[in-house]
Image (cartoon, rainbow, N blue to C red):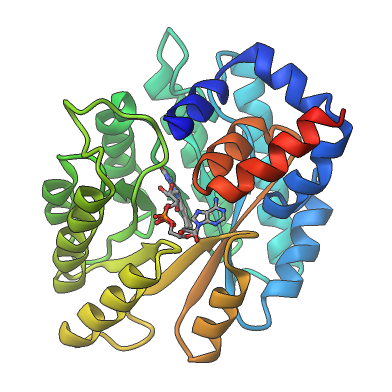
Length: 307
Ligand code: FAD
């Protein structure tokens, strides 16, 4: 219930203005967000790059303004040029949210998001790296997968995300397990109805394992995005059973979440990528993270009540 309330709050302008104006919130936000500027993201990337890979996320979603979507494209072109200039091209990619690139615009949203993401893919290719398209709520899944299929025609290494909590995902994994595909499997971060999604943790976890089996047995590159130790162990075991070498798949975690486990996996020679969000539009991303662990909520409430 708490998680549903926080996800609802993540889309509320009223809650946003209260949270953004709370001065004591900044240290809690800083745990999950690398900073406001591209320099902050690049600094964090250099710190992580000793033993980890990186995916940059320029924060921003749900835009209904074409000019803002254009600014997001420019922000990605800037970070891609920077990672190229700093020699991070082999270590870092970018993650994009289509709702920040125009997907939700009333007129031609899908077409505009495709063209905007294509321009980011061109900049990524020039920097020697790739793009992974994040997945948002279930009303956008078909549109997102169709945009990813179109992008893959020109940029075959474009990755996407599939969410184990959706009942459709095992079949989507089978569709996307072919040669060259890059699929990040996560549990799913939105509040989805029981008509389309598993709502019990045990059912979501069971679905995650079924999906992992399909991806590991397939011909693509599975990206195991979870902080759940049991699923990490299962992922490693399934990869071994499928005959995958250590560079035939990777683990992924969010910046600020279980950093010691990230370091331990990396120290064992496993590929570990950290998703590094940066920018000023941190509110929705931050609220979803709060809902994922009750202890995060305690820090948040303390900051809110001491404003
Ligand atoms: P959980 O069962 O939620 O957590 C397992 C354990 O991990 C918890 O007990 C806790 O100890 C720790 N943990 C988990 N989350 C937190 C946290 N926020 N703070 C502190 N500890 C925590 N979701 C989407 O819907 N679309 C996406 O495109 C997407 N991209 C992602 C990319 C990456 C690299 C990762 C790691 C996650 C992404 N997610 C995305 C979020 C994902 O769907 C889950 O909401 C999130 O990862 C929590 O699920 P979990 O697998 O870690 O398992």
